[in-house]
Length: 64
Image 1: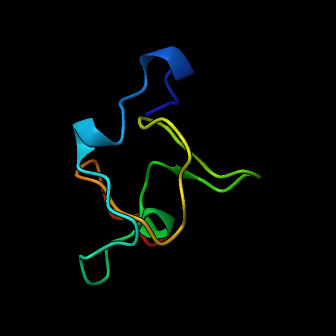
Image 2: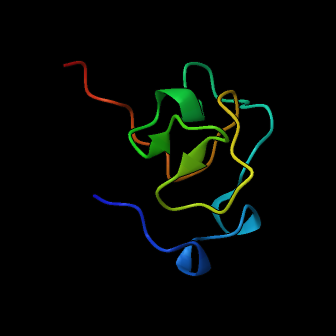
């Protein structure tokens, strides 16, 4: 999936954003939607996005 325009991204409250993640082994840095730029971004969620945070959009990256 590709990144949606910023104005169409979901808010932190809409996706249950947690800072830091309370879900063992699940965080933005391990998510398929995480974009490792400076600053980090998410394909679906408005910033700010942090590596160690979590939301309900989490999908584990496939090991390639």
